[in-house]
Image (cartoon, rainbow over all chains, first blue to last red; front, side):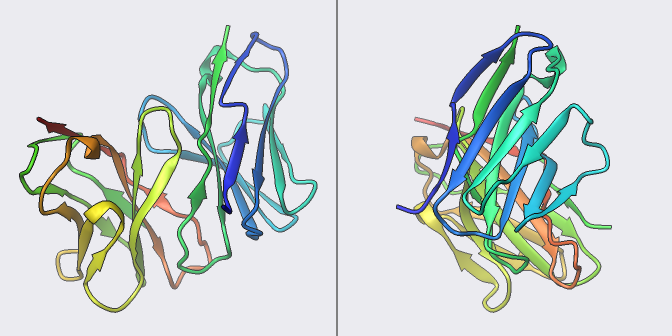
Length: 113
Length: 115
């Protein structure tokens, strides 16, 4: 089945140690998003790619970076994780700018120790 | 500016009773409306959407939602609740006339179905 896959499901990292979360999709969607979600709150958009065009949200900390080497893969890099970065990180895709909804991965739960 | 309000943090319903999860929105143009459900430690799953057409939209797992333009609402409903419907529900909107195509999310409503 076409889907969005996030690895790993659970990630524990040390304070200040760089960590990378990955997302892959078999939907061939143009757009890929990274969201941060804390404590059952609404997901907060960090950035997204439309094809190769990167779009950063104004309030996304510089500590967060992203890479999209091809259509199928997108990575979230946290350069120096702090305790406040512990959260669920959600990857989503959408076909384009139209009325299609998003397809989400199962998320990666990040713990910072 | 676009916005979404989910006025209830939590809704409690007895199994077998009808349920409603409320959502109101504000967009300056043409609303595209969505409902998503999130089970614990999982990503969000698409339930249904309204883009155009019939005001009553049917979606997954027996859920439906009614678009009410005059009240700017898009409430989620189900005639008979199941314990397995217990989850976190998010309403989202975007303005179909706006080139900024990102979804604006409500704060979420926790739905608890009691046996």
